[in-house]
Length: 621
Image (cartoon, rainbow, N blue to C red; front, side):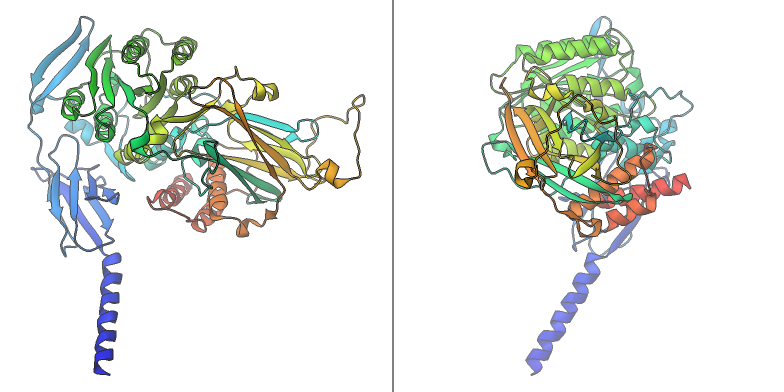
Protein backbone atom coordinates (compact mmCIF):
# COMPACT_ATOMS: atom_id res chain seq x y z
CA UNK A 1 0.00 0.00 0.00
CA UNK A 2 2.79 2.39 0.95
CA UNK A 3 4.53 1.56 -2.31
CA UNK A 4 1.39 2.46 -4.28
CA UNK A 5 1.04 5.75 -2.42
CA UNK A 6 4.71 6.58 -3.07
CA UNK A 7 4.29 5.88 -6.76
CA UNK A 8 1.17 8.07 -6.84
CA UNK A 9 2.98 10.94 -5.11
CA UNK A 10 5.90 10.69 -7.54
CA UNK A 11 3.49 10.71 -10.49
CA UNK A 12 1.75 13.80 -9.15
CA UNK A 13 5.07 15.58 -8.61
CA UNK A 14 6.16 14.71 -12.15
CA UNK A 15 2.86 16.06 -13.46
CA UNK A 16 3.35 19.33 -11.57
CA UNK A 17 6.92 19.57 -12.86
CA UNK A 18 5.85 19.00 -16.46
CA UNK A 19 3.02 21.49 -16.17
CA UNK A 20 5.42 24.04 -14.69
CA UNK A 21 8.09 23.52 -17.32
CA UNK A 22 5.62 23.62 -20.22
CA UNK A 23 4.44 27.05 -19.22
CA UNK A 24 7.60 28.64 -17.85
CA UNK A 25 8.26 32.11 -19.20
CA UNK A 26 11.68 33.72 -19.63
CA UNK A 27 12.12 37.47 -19.90
CA UNK A 28 15.14 39.66 -20.35
CA UNK A 29 16.73 42.81 -21.75
CA UNK A 30 19.45 42.87 -24.41
CA UNK A 31 21.86 45.82 -24.34
CA UNK A 32 25.13 46.88 -25.96
CA UNK A 33 28.42 47.68 -24.19
CA UNK A 34 27.16 51.15 -23.28
CA UNK A 35 24.00 49.79 -21.68
CA UNK A 36 21.76 50.94 -24.55
CA UNK A 37 18.86 48.58 -25.40
CA UNK A 38 19.08 46.79 -28.77
CA UNK A 39 15.73 46.34 -30.53
CA UNK A 40 15.30 43.66 -33.19
CA UNK A 41 17.59 41.04 -31.62
CA UNK A 42 16.68 37.45 -32.54
CA UNK A 43 16.30 35.25 -29.45
CA UNK A 44 15.98 31.57 -30.38
CA UNK A 45 16.06 28.34 -28.39
CA UNK A 46 18.93 26.38 -29.91
CA UNK A 47 17.89 23.49 -32.12
CA UNK A 48 14.25 24.64 -32.37
CA UNK A 49 12.17 27.17 -34.29
CA UNK A 50 10.84 28.72 -31.05
CA UNK A 51 11.97 32.28 -30.53
CA UNK A 52 11.21 35.93 -29.95
CA UNK A 53 12.50 39.37 -30.93
CA UNK A 54 13.41 42.26 -28.65
CA UNK A 55 11.16 45.32 -28.69
CA UNK A 56 12.14 49.01 -28.74
CA UNK A 57 13.34 48.74 -25.14
CA UNK A 58 15.45 45.68 -25.87
CA UNK A 59 13.00 43.46 -23.96
CA UNK A 60 11.85 39.98 -24.94
CA UNK A 61 9.49 37.34 -23.56
CA UNK A 62 9.78 33.66 -24.40
CA UNK A 63 7.85 30.60 -23.22
CA UNK A 64 9.89 27.39 -23.02
CA UNK A 65 8.38 23.98 -23.65
CA UNK A 66 11.08 21.80 -22.09
CA UNK A 67 13.54 22.28 -19.26
CA UNK A 68 17.17 22.98 -20.05
CA UNK A 69 18.31 24.24 -23.39
CA UNK A 70 20.34 27.17 -24.68
CA UNK A 71 19.33 30.61 -25.92
CA UNK A 72 21.04 32.01 -29.02
CA UNK A 73 20.93 35.82 -29.30
CA UNK A 74 22.01 37.42 -32.57
CA UNK A 75 21.81 40.73 -34.37
CA UNK A 76 23.52 42.21 -37.41
CA UNK A 77 26.76 43.96 -36.44
CA UNK A 78 27.17 42.06 -33.13
CA UNK A 79 28.76 38.78 -32.14
CA UNK A 80 26.09 36.13 -31.48
CA UNK A 81 25.93 34.89 -27.90
CA UNK A 82 24.70 31.69 -26.26
CA UNK A 83 23.17 31.55 -22.78
CA UNK A 84 22.36 28.35 -20.84
CA UNK A 85 18.75 28.57 -19.65
CA UNK A 86 18.97 26.29 -16.62
CA UNK A 87 16.38 27.28 -14.05
CA UNK A 88 16.61 31.01 -14.77
CA UNK A 89 13.48 33.04 -15.51
CA UNK A 90 15.27 36.34 -16.19
CA UNK A 91 18.19 36.34 -18.65
CA UNK A 92 19.68 39.77 -19.40
CA UNK A 93 22.40 39.77 -22.06
CA UNK A 94 25.01 42.23 -23.33
CA UNK A 95 26.01 41.85 -26.98
CA UNK A 96 29.46 42.95 -28.16
CA UNK A 97 30.03 44.69 -31.47
CA UNK A 98 31.76 42.53 -34.09
CA UNK A 99 35.13 44.09 -34.92
CA UNK A 100 35.95 41.59 -37.63
CA UNK A 101 37.22 43.19 -40.82
CA UNK A 102 35.18 42.28 -43.88
CA UNK A 103 36.10 42.56 -47.50
CA UNK A 104 33.86 45.07 -49.21
CA UNK A 105 32.85 44.53 -52.82
CA UNK A 106 31.88 47.73 -54.60
CA UNK A 107 30.25 47.73 -58.02
CA UNK A 108 31.23 50.77 -60.07
CA UNK A 109 31.06 51.79 -63.69
CA UNK A 110 34.69 50.60 -64.01
CA UNK A 111 33.83 47.11 -62.77
CA UNK A 112 34.35 45.45 -59.39
CA UNK A 113 36.79 46.85 -56.88
CA UNK A 114 37.75 45.23 -53.57
CA UNK A 115 38.95 46.86 -50.43
CA UNK A 116 39.00 46.08 -46.75
CA UNK A 117 37.68 48.36 -44.11
CA UNK A 118 37.09 48.15 -40.39
CA UNK A 119 33.81 47.45 -38.69
CA UNK A 120 33.59 51.02 -37.40
CA UNK A 121 33.45 52.26 -41.02
CA UNK A 122 30.95 49.73 -42.31
CA UNK A 123 27.64 50.99 -43.62
CA UNK A 124 25.73 47.88 -42.57
CA UNK A 125 25.29 49.18 -39.02
CA UNK A 126 24.24 52.75 -38.42
CA UNK A 127 23.32 53.76 -34.86
CA UNK A 128 21.09 56.63 -35.97
CA UNK A 129 19.18 54.28 -38.25
CA UNK A 130 19.24 51.63 -35.55
CA UNK A 131 17.29 53.91 -33.24
CA UNK A 132 14.39 53.95 -35.71
CA UNK A 133 14.01 50.18 -35.82
CA UNK A 134 10.72 48.92 -34.42
CA UNK A 135 10.08 45.39 -33.36
CA UNK A 136 7.66 43.04 -35.06
CA UNK A 137 6.74 39.44 -34.52
CA UNK A 138 9.67 37.34 -35.64
CA UNK A 139 11.77 40.17 -37.03
CA UNK A 140 12.60 43.83 -37.22
CA UNK A 141 11.29 46.70 -39.30
CA UNK A 142 12.78 49.96 -40.45
CA UNK A 143 10.59 53.03 -40.39
CA UNK A 144 11.26 55.41 -43.25
CA UNK A 145 13.04 58.38 -41.68
CA UNK A 146 11.59 61.25 -43.66
CA UNK A 147 12.15 59.55 -47.02
CA UNK A 148 9.41 59.65 -49.62
CA UNK A 149 7.51 56.39 -49.88
CA UNK A 150 7.86 55.14 -53.46
CA UNK A 151 6.28 51.71 -53.11
CA UNK A 152 4.19 50.64 -56.10
CA UNK A 153 1.51 47.97 -56.49
CA UNK A 154 -0.50 46.79 -59.47
CA UNK A 155 -4.15 47.81 -59.16
CA UNK A 156 -6.58 45.04 -58.28
CA UNK A 157 -10.05 44.95 -59.87
CA UNK A 158 -12.01 42.61 -57.64
CA UNK A 159 -13.79 39.61 -59.16
CA UNK A 160 -17.58 39.94 -59.14
CA UNK A 161 -20.34 37.34 -59.28
CA UNK A 162 -20.86 35.46 -62.56
CA UNK A 163 -24.09 33.77 -63.57
CA UNK A 164 -23.45 30.05 -63.97
CA UNK A 165 -25.97 29.60 -66.79
CA UNK A 166 -24.48 32.22 -69.10
CA UNK A 167 -20.90 31.86 -67.74
CA UNK A 168 -20.55 28.29 -66.48
CA UNK A 169 -16.74 28.16 -66.72
CA UNK A 170 -14.25 29.78 -64.35
CA UNK A 171 -10.65 29.51 -65.62
CA UNK A 172 -7.45 30.70 -63.99
CA UNK A 173 -3.76 29.96 -63.53
CA UNK A 174 -2.57 28.70 -60.14
CA UNK A 175 -0.58 30.99 -57.87
CA UNK A 176 1.84 29.67 -55.25
CA UNK A 177 3.27 33.10 -54.41
CA UNK A 178 2.61 34.35 -50.89
CA UNK A 179 4.51 37.64 -50.85
CA UNK A 180 1.34 39.60 -50.17
CA UNK A 181 0.81 38.06 -46.73
CA UNK A 182 4.29 38.75 -45.37
CA UNK A 183 4.19 42.25 -46.87
CA UNK A 184 0.85 42.92 -45.17
CA UNK A 185 2.31 41.57 -41.94
CA UNK A 186 5.17 44.04 -42.29
CA UNK A 187 2.72 46.97 -42.55
CA UNK A 188 0.57 45.89 -39.61
CA UNK A 189 3.53 45.10 -37.36
CA UNK A 190 4.77 48.60 -38.12
CA UNK A 191 1.46 50.11 -36.97
CA UNK A 192 0.02 50.83 -40.41
CA UNK A 193 -2.84 49.43 -42.47
CA UNK A 194 -1.62 48.18 -45.87
CA UNK A 195 -2.74 49.85 -49.10
CA UNK A 196 -5.69 48.02 -50.65
CA UNK A 197 -3.74 47.11 -53.81
CA UNK A 198 -1.12 45.33 -51.69
CA UNK A 199 -3.80 42.81 -50.67
CA UNK A 200 -3.92 39.70 -52.85
CA UNK A 201 -6.24 37.34 -51.02
CA UNK A 202 -5.11 34.19 -52.82
CA UNK A 203 -1.53 34.81 -51.64
CA UNK A 204 -2.75 35.33 -48.08
CA UNK A 205 -4.71 32.06 -48.14
CA UNK A 206 -1.84 30.18 -49.79
CA UNK A 207 0.66 31.33 -47.17
CA UNK A 208 -0.73 28.62 -44.90
CA UNK A 209 -0.57 24.86 -45.31
CA UNK A 210 -3.69 22.72 -45.25
CA UNK A 211 -4.24 18.99 -44.80
CA UNK A 212 -4.81 17.70 -48.32
CA UNK A 213 -4.44 14.03 -49.32
CA UNK A 214 -1.10 12.77 -50.63
CA UNK A 215 -0.95 12.19 -54.40
CA UNK A 216 -1.46 8.46 -54.94
CA UNK A 217 -1.10 8.06 -58.69
CA UNK A 218 1.16 9.11 -61.51
CA UNK A 219 0.04 12.73 -61.26
CA UNK A 220 2.33 15.02 -59.18
CA UNK A 221 -0.52 16.41 -57.05
CA UNK A 222 -3.90 15.52 -55.58
CA UNK A 223 -7.18 17.43 -56.01
CA UNK A 224 -9.73 17.88 -53.22
CA UNK A 225 -12.78 20.05 -52.46
CA UNK A 226 -15.09 20.98 -49.57
CA UNK A 227 -18.18 23.19 -49.24
CA UNK A 228 -19.80 24.94 -46.29
CA UNK A 229 -22.03 27.91 -45.57
CA UNK A 230 -20.29 31.25 -46.09
CA UNK A 231 -19.28 32.95 -42.81
CA UNK A 232 -19.93 36.51 -43.98
CA UNK A 233 -23.22 35.69 -45.75
CA UNK A 234 -25.19 32.77 -44.36
CA UNK A 235 -27.37 32.63 -47.51
CA UNK A 236 -24.29 31.80 -49.60
CA UNK A 237 -21.90 28.84 -49.73
CA UNK A 238 -18.12 28.74 -49.62
CA UNK A 239 -16.18 26.29 -51.82
CA UNK A 240 -12.55 25.40 -51.05
CA UNK A 241 -10.54 23.66 -53.78
CA UNK A 242 -7.05 22.38 -52.96
CA UNK A 243 -4.02 20.87 -54.66
CA UNK A 244 -1.19 19.16 -52.82
CA UNK A 245 2.10 18.65 -54.60
CA UNK A 246 4.15 15.52 -54.09
CA UNK A 247 6.99 15.88 -51.59
CA UNK A 248 10.38 14.97 -53.01
CA UNK A 249 13.14 14.03 -50.60
CA UNK A 250 15.99 16.52 -50.70
CA UNK A 251 18.48 13.79 -51.62
CA UNK A 252 16.39 12.91 -54.67
CA UNK A 253 16.11 16.46 -56.00
CA UNK A 254 17.93 17.21 -59.25
CA UNK A 255 21.25 19.03 -59.22
CA UNK A 256 20.99 22.80 -58.91
CA UNK A 257 22.67 25.49 -60.97
CA UNK A 258 21.80 28.63 -59.01
CA UNK A 259 22.71 32.25 -59.69
CA UNK A 260 22.16 34.73 -56.87
CA UNK A 261 21.33 38.07 -58.49
CA UNK A 262 21.73 40.58 -55.66
CA UNK A 263 20.71 44.22 -55.66
CA UNK A 264 23.47 46.24 -53.94
CA UNK A 265 22.17 49.67 -54.95
CA UNK A 266 21.99 52.54 -52.47
CA UNK A 267 18.33 51.85 -51.71
CA UNK A 268 19.37 48.48 -50.22
CA UNK A 269 21.44 49.92 -47.36
CA UNK A 270 18.72 49.74 -44.66
CA UNK A 271 19.04 46.95 -42.06
CA UNK A 272 15.87 45.21 -43.31
CA UNK A 273 17.28 45.03 -46.85
CA UNK A 274 20.87 44.01 -47.71
CA UNK A 275 21.91 42.93 -44.18
CA UNK A 276 18.78 40.78 -43.84
CA UNK A 277 19.20 39.54 -47.42
CA UNK A 278 22.73 38.35 -46.65
CA UNK A 279 21.54 36.46 -43.59
CA UNK A 280 18.73 34.90 -45.64
CA UNK A 281 21.03 33.71 -48.42
CA UNK A 282 23.35 32.12 -45.86
CA UNK A 283 20.43 29.98 -44.71
CA UNK A 284 19.98 28.81 -48.29
CA UNK A 285 23.70 28.12 -48.74
CA UNK A 286 23.56 25.80 -45.71
CA UNK A 287 20.95 23.71 -47.56
CA UNK A 288 23.13 23.16 -50.64
CA UNK A 289 24.63 19.78 -51.46
CA UNK A 290 28.08 19.19 -52.91
CA UNK A 291 26.58 18.53 -56.36
CA UNK A 292 24.82 21.92 -56.37
CA UNK A 293 26.54 25.05 -57.71
CA UNK A 294 26.13 28.76 -56.93
CA UNK A 295 27.28 31.89 -58.73
CA UNK A 296 26.75 35.47 -57.52
CA UNK A 297 26.00 38.47 -59.73
CA UNK A 298 25.52 41.92 -58.21
CA UNK A 299 24.19 45.12 -59.72
CA UNK A 300 24.15 48.77 -58.79
CA UNK A 301 25.50 51.47 -61.14
CA UNK A 302 26.54 48.53 -63.33
CA UNK A 303 26.53 44.76 -63.01
CA UNK A 304 29.38 42.47 -62.02
CA UNK A 305 30.18 38.82 -61.42
CA UNK A 306 31.29 38.46 -57.79
CA UNK A 307 31.52 34.67 -57.62
CA UNK A 308 31.82 32.25 -60.50
CA UNK A 309 29.83 29.03 -60.31
CA UNK A 310 31.07 27.29 -57.13
CA UNK A 311 30.13 23.84 -55.77
CA UNK A 312 27.97 23.69 -52.65
CA UNK A 313 30.74 21.87 -50.81
CA UNK A 314 32.73 25.14 -50.72
CA UNK A 315 30.27 26.87 -48.42
CA UNK A 316 32.98 29.01 -46.81
CA UNK A 317 33.90 30.54 -50.15
CA UNK A 318 30.27 31.30 -50.97
CA UNK A 319 29.69 32.77 -47.50
CA UNK A 320 32.74 35.01 -47.84
CA UNK A 321 31.39 36.44 -51.09
CA UNK A 322 28.02 37.13 -49.46
CA UNK A 323 29.59 38.66 -46.34
CA UNK A 324 31.57 41.13 -48.43
CA UNK A 325 28.60 42.78 -50.13
CA UNK A 326 27.86 46.45 -49.40
CA UNK A 327 25.20 48.78 -50.80
CA UNK A 328 25.83 51.85 -52.94
CA UNK A 329 24.97 53.35 -56.32
CA UNK A 330 21.94 53.33 -58.62
CA UNK A 331 20.16 50.25 -59.93
CA UNK A 332 20.98 48.67 -63.30
CA UNK A 333 18.38 45.91 -62.96
CA UNK A 334 18.22 45.00 -66.64
CA UNK A 335 21.99 44.64 -66.96
CA UNK A 336 22.07 42.48 -63.84
CA UNK A 337 19.35 40.18 -65.16
CA UNK A 338 21.15 39.73 -68.48
CA UNK A 339 24.44 38.90 -66.79
CA UNK A 340 22.70 36.44 -64.44
CA UNK A 341 21.10 34.63 -67.36
CA UNK A 342 24.45 34.49 -69.15
CA UNK A 343 26.07 32.89 -66.10
CA UNK A 344 23.19 30.42 -65.72
CA UNK A 345 23.43 29.46 -69.38
CA UNK A 346 27.20 29.05 -69.13
CA UNK A 347 26.77 26.46 -66.34
CA UNK A 348 23.48 24.92 -67.52
CA UNK A 349 22.74 21.42 -66.15
CA UNK A 350 20.68 19.20 -68.45
CA UNK A 351 17.79 17.80 -66.44
CA UNK A 352 18.79 19.93 -63.45
CA UNK A 353 17.30 22.85 -61.59
CA UNK A 354 18.62 25.92 -63.41
CA UNK A 355 17.40 28.98 -61.55
CA UNK A 356 18.15 32.64 -60.84
CA UNK A 357 17.33 33.92 -57.35
CA UNK A 358 16.77 37.66 -57.60
CA UNK A 359 16.97 39.43 -54.23
CA UNK A 360 15.97 43.11 -54.28
CA UNK A 361 13.64 45.82 -53.05
CA UNK A 362 12.45 45.95 -56.64
CA UNK A 363 13.81 49.38 -57.55
CA UNK A 364 14.86 48.93 -61.19
CA UNK A 365 15.50 52.56 -62.02
CA UNK A 366 18.43 52.41 -64.46
CA UNK A 367 18.63 50.56 -67.76
CA UNK A 368 15.95 47.99 -68.51
CA UNK A 369 13.37 49.60 -66.25
CA UNK A 370 10.01 49.36 -68.02
CA UNK A 371 7.67 46.55 -66.98
CA UNK A 372 7.15 45.57 -70.63
CA UNK A 373 10.89 45.32 -71.31
CA UNK A 374 11.46 43.27 -68.16
CA UNK A 375 8.58 40.99 -69.06
CA UNK A 376 9.90 40.33 -72.56
CA UNK A 377 13.41 39.65 -71.28
CA UNK A 378 12.23 37.11 -68.71
CA UNK A 379 9.75 35.46 -71.10
CA UNK A 380 12.46 35.06 -73.71
CA UNK A 381 14.95 33.51 -71.27
CA UNK A 382 12.51 31.09 -69.61
CA UNK A 383 12.34 29.17 -72.89
CA UNK A 384 15.94 28.14 -72.29
CA UNK A 385 14.84 26.20 -69.18
CA UNK A 386 16.10 28.77 -66.65
CA UNK A 387 13.49 29.71 -64.05
CA UNK A 388 13.53 32.61 -61.60
CA UNK A 389 12.66 33.08 -57.93
CA UNK A 390 12.18 36.64 -56.64
CA UNK A 391 12.80 37.60 -53.01
CA UNK A 392 11.61 41.07 -51.99
CA UNK A 393 13.07 43.01 -49.05
CA UNK A 394 12.52 46.24 -47.13
CA UNK A 395 9.93 48.97 -46.92
CA UNK A 396 9.31 52.39 -48.41
CA UNK A 397 10.72 51.44 -51.80
CA UNK A 398 9.01 48.15 -52.78
CA UNK A 399 8.21 47.72 -56.46
CA UNK A 400 5.79 44.89 -55.90
CA UNK A 401 4.27 45.14 -59.38
CA UNK A 402 7.63 44.64 -61.11
CA UNK A 403 8.74 41.78 -58.89
CA UNK A 404 5.49 39.92 -59.39
CA UNK A 405 5.78 40.27 -63.18
CA UNK A 406 9.33 38.91 -63.20
CA UNK A 407 8.35 35.86 -61.12
CA UNK A 408 5.15 35.16 -63.06
CA UNK A 409 6.72 35.47 -66.49
CA UNK A 410 9.92 33.68 -65.47
CA UNK A 411 8.25 30.39 -64.45
CA UNK A 412 9.05 31.08 -60.82
CA UNK A 413 7.66 32.37 -57.54
CA UNK A 414 7.76 35.53 -55.46
CA UNK A 415 8.19 35.84 -51.70
CA UNK A 416 8.58 38.89 -49.48
CA UNK A 417 11.14 38.47 -46.68
CA UNK A 418 10.29 40.72 -43.74
CA UNK A 419 12.39 38.90 -41.13
CA UNK A 420 14.83 36.04 -40.69
CA UNK A 421 12.09 33.64 -39.62
CA UNK A 422 10.34 34.23 -42.95
CA UNK A 423 13.62 33.61 -44.75
CA UNK A 424 13.94 30.31 -42.90
CA UNK A 425 10.39 29.34 -43.90
CA UNK A 426 10.92 30.13 -47.59
CA UNK A 427 14.52 28.98 -48.05
CA UNK A 428 14.86 26.15 -45.53
CA UNK A 429 11.52 24.69 -44.45
CA UNK A 430 9.98 25.02 -47.94
CA UNK A 431 13.28 24.61 -49.77
CA UNK A 432 11.93 22.13 -52.34
CA UNK A 433 8.74 24.04 -53.09
CA UNK A 434 10.57 27.33 -53.49
CA UNK A 435 13.27 26.05 -55.83
CA UNK A 436 12.16 22.80 -57.48
CA UNK A 437 9.28 22.67 -59.98
CA UNK A 438 7.22 19.46 -60.20
CA UNK A 439 4.61 20.77 -62.68
CA UNK A 440 4.40 23.81 -64.93
CA UNK A 441 1.60 25.67 -66.72
CA UNK A 442 -0.94 24.48 -64.14
CA UNK A 443 -4.45 25.73 -64.90
CA UNK A 444 -7.81 25.38 -63.17
CA UNK A 445 -11.16 25.27 -64.95
CA UNK A 446 -14.33 24.78 -62.92
CA UNK A 447 -17.69 24.14 -64.59
CA UNK A 448 -20.65 25.00 -62.38
CA UNK A 449 -23.99 23.24 -62.64
CA UNK A 450 -26.69 25.97 -62.87
CA UNK A 451 -29.22 23.56 -61.35
CA UNK A 452 -27.25 23.81 -58.09
CA UNK A 453 -25.16 26.99 -58.31
CA UNK A 454 -26.86 30.14 -59.54
CA UNK A 455 -23.83 32.46 -59.40
CA UNK A 456 -20.23 32.23 -58.26
CA UNK A 457 -17.34 34.53 -57.37
CA UNK A 458 -13.67 33.53 -57.38
CA UNK A 459 -12.06 35.13 -54.31
CA UNK A 460 -8.72 36.56 -55.40
CA UNK A 461 -6.63 35.44 -58.39
CA UNK A 462 -7.62 38.65 -60.20
CA UNK A 463 -4.30 38.81 -62.07
CA UNK A 464 -4.39 35.09 -62.88
CA UNK A 465 -7.65 34.89 -64.82
CA UNK A 466 -7.64 33.10 -68.18
CA UNK A 467 -10.10 32.87 -71.06
CA UNK A 468 -12.10 29.65 -71.24
CA UNK A 469 -10.32 28.60 -74.43
CA UNK A 470 -6.89 29.13 -72.80
CA UNK A 471 -7.45 26.03 -70.69
CA UNK A 472 -6.89 23.65 -73.60
CA UNK A 473 -4.26 25.82 -75.30
CA UNK A 474 -0.84 24.39 -74.42
CA UNK A 475 0.80 27.53 -75.77
CA UNK A 476 -0.70 29.57 -72.93
CA UNK A 477 1.66 30.11 -70.00
CA UNK A 478 0.39 29.49 -66.47
CA UNK A 479 1.69 28.97 -62.93
CA UNK A 480 4.27 26.51 -61.66
CA UNK A 481 4.00 24.18 -58.68
CA UNK A 482 6.93 23.15 -56.49
CA UNK A 483 7.70 20.08 -54.45
CA UNK A 484 5.36 19.85 -51.46
CA UNK A 485 3.45 23.02 -52.43
CA UNK A 486 -0.21 23.52 -51.55
CA UNK A 487 -2.54 25.57 -53.75
CA UNK A 488 -5.93 26.69 -52.43
CA UNK A 489 -8.76 28.53 -54.19
CA UNK A 490 -11.97 29.81 -52.60
CA UNK A 491 -15.30 30.54 -54.31
CA UNK A 492 -18.34 32.26 -52.86
CA UNK A 493 -21.42 30.56 -54.32
CA UNK A 494 -25.06 31.66 -54.51
CA UNK A 495 -27.43 28.67 -54.55
CA UNK A 496 -29.65 28.28 -57.59
CA UNK A 497 -33.10 29.80 -57.05
CA UNK A 498 -31.88 32.10 -54.30
CA UNK A 499 -33.45 35.55 -54.11
CA UNK A 500 -29.89 36.86 -54.11
CA UNK A 501 -29.06 35.17 -57.45
CA UNK A 502 -27.40 37.62 -59.82
CA UNK A 503 -28.04 36.90 -63.52
CA UNK A 504 -25.77 38.77 -65.90
CA UNK A 505 -27.90 38.71 -69.05
CA UNK A 506 -31.50 38.17 -70.05
CA UNK A 507 -32.47 34.64 -71.13
CA UNK A 508 -31.10 33.92 -74.61
CA UNK A 509 -33.65 33.96 -77.42
CA UNK A 510 -31.90 32.01 -80.19
CA UNK A 511 -29.92 29.39 -78.23
CA UNK A 512 -31.52 25.95 -77.92
CA UNK A 513 -32.76 25.01 -74.46
CA UNK A 514 -32.01 21.39 -73.60
CA UNK A 515 -34.31 19.82 -71.05
CA UNK A 516 -34.15 16.29 -69.75
CA UNK A 517 -36.24 15.03 -66.88
CA UNK A 518 -33.74 12.30 -66.04
CA UNK A 519 -31.58 13.57 -63.16
CA UNK A 520 -28.83 11.09 -63.99
CA UNK A 521 -28.56 12.41 -67.53
CA UNK A 522 -28.60 16.04 -66.40
CA UNK A 523 -26.07 15.42 -63.60
CA UNK A 524 -28.47 17.26 -61.30
CA UNK A 525 -26.79 15.84 -58.19
CA UNK A 526 -23.47 17.40 -59.14
CA UNK A 527 -22.58 20.91 -58.01
CA UNK A 528 -19.53 21.36 -60.20
CA UNK A 529 -16.65 19.67 -61.99
CA UNK A 530 -13.02 20.62 -61.34
CA UNK A 531 -10.56 20.24 -64.20
CA UNK A 532 -6.81 20.76 -63.86
CA UNK A 533 -4.27 20.83 -66.69
CA UNK A 534 -0.51 20.68 -66.18
CA UNK A 535 2.75 19.85 -67.93
CA UNK A 536 5.79 18.01 -66.66
CA UNK A 537 8.66 20.41 -65.88
CA UNK A 538 10.38 19.57 -69.17
CA UNK A 539 7.23 18.67 -71.12
CA UNK A 540 5.32 20.46 -73.85
CA UNK A 541 1.99 18.59 -73.81
CA UNK A 542 -0.46 18.98 -70.95
CA UNK A 543 -2.24 16.30 -68.95
CA UNK A 544 -5.80 16.53 -67.60
CA UNK A 545 -7.23 15.70 -64.15
CA UNK A 546 -10.94 15.91 -63.34
CA UNK A 547 -12.94 15.72 -60.12
CA UNK A 548 -16.70 15.96 -59.65
CA UNK A 549 -18.13 17.59 -56.51
CA UNK A 550 -21.60 16.60 -55.32
CA UNK A 551 -21.68 18.06 -51.84
CA UNK A 552 -22.66 18.04 -49.09
CA UNK A 553 -22.75 21.68 -48.03
CA UNK A 554 -21.90 21.66 -44.31
CA UNK A 555 -22.70 24.29 -41.73
CA UNK A 556 -19.57 26.41 -41.25
CA UNK A 557 -19.28 25.16 -37.66
CA UNK A 558 -19.16 21.56 -38.91
CA UNK A 559 -16.63 22.22 -41.67
CA UNK A 560 -13.00 21.17 -41.38
CA UNK A 561 -10.58 23.33 -39.41
CA UNK A 562 -8.77 24.02 -42.70
CA UNK A 563 -11.86 25.43 -44.41
CA UNK A 564 -12.70 27.58 -41.41
CA UNK A 565 -9.17 28.93 -41.21
CA UNK A 566 -8.97 29.65 -44.96
CA UNK A 567 -12.32 31.44 -44.67
CA UNK A 568 -10.95 33.53 -41.79
CA UNK A 569 -7.91 34.57 -43.85
CA UNK A 570 -10.13 35.45 -46.83
CA UNK A 571 -12.47 37.46 -44.60
CA UNK A 572 -9.50 39.37 -43.16
CA UNK A 573 -8.21 40.02 -46.70
CA UNK A 574 -11.58 41.34 -47.86
CA UNK A 575 -11.66 43.79 -44.97
CA UNK A 576 -8.10 44.99 -45.67
CA UNK A 577 -8.83 45.27 -49.41
CA UNK A 578 -12.12 47.14 -48.85
CA UNK A 579 -14.09 44.52 -50.79
CA UNK A 580 -17.64 45.36 -51.83
CA UNK A 581 -18.64 41.78 -50.96
CA UNK A 582 -17.72 41.79 -47.26
CA UNK A 583 -21.35 41.30 -46.13
CA UNK A 584 -21.18 40.70 -42.37
CA UNK A 585 -17.38 40.33 -42.33
CA UNK A 586 -15.55 41.88 -39.39
CA UNK A 587 -12.26 41.55 -37.53
CA UNK A 588 -14.07 39.85 -34.65
CA UNK A 589 -15.76 37.38 -36.99
CA UNK A 590 -12.42 36.52 -38.62
CA UNK A 591 -10.86 36.11 -35.16
CA UNK A 592 -13.59 33.77 -33.96
CA UNK A 593 -13.23 31.60 -37.06
CA UNK A 594 -9.45 31.43 -36.71
CA UNK A 595 -9.58 30.62 -32.99
CA UNK A 596 -11.78 27.61 -33.72
CA UNK A 597 -9.50 26.41 -36.51
CA UNK A 598 -6.12 25.84 -34.93
CA UNK A 599 -5.44 22.67 -36.90
CA UNK A 600 -1.83 21.69 -37.49
CA UNK A 601 0.14 24.71 -36.28
CA UNK A 602 3.56 23.27 -35.49
CA UNK A 603 5.38 26.46 -36.51
CA UNK A 604 2.88 28.89 -34.97
CA UNK A 605 1.82 30.57 -38.24
CA UNK A 606 -1.89 30.34 -37.44
CA UNK A 607 -1.33 31.73 -33.94
CA UNK A 608 0.66 34.57 -35.50
CA UNK A 609 -2.26 35.27 -37.85
CA UNK A 610 -4.60 35.64 -34.89
CA UNK A 611 -2.23 38.17 -33.32
CA UNK A 612 -2.05 40.00 -36.66
CA UNK A 613 -5.84 40.33 -36.92
CA UNK A 614 -5.98 41.65 -33.34
CA UNK A 615 -3.29 44.24 -34.13
CA UNK A 616 -5.08 45.35 -37.30
CA UNK A 617 -8.32 45.70 -35.34
CA UNK A 618 -6.56 47.87 -32.76
CA UNK A 619 -5.00 50.05 -35.48
CA UNK A 620 -8.35 50.48 -37.23
CA UNK A 621 -10.11 51.42 -34.03
